[in-house]
Image 1 (spheres, one colour):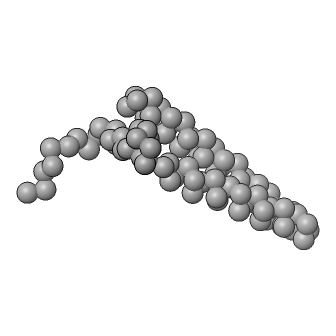
Image 2 (image 1 turned 180 degrees about the vertical axis):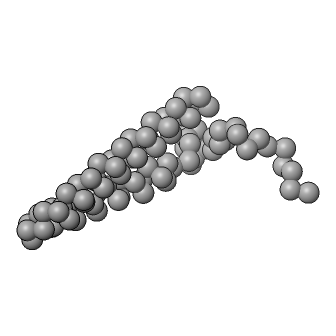
Length: 85
């Protein structure tokens, strides 16, 4: 019961899209990190325009962190795709 014969460490299986091409699942964590990056950048600009320099610097630091996370998850997705493809 519960054992499907799959390996939890194996990369996700490729699925077929409408046109018969093989594709990997969407890298959701990269997309979420990109959204956080853009929103933090907007918040930084608003903070600087309103004259709150300290809060603006904090938002800039958060922008850098989320940008690095985005690139990490994009590269990880590409590596998984090259291993399975």
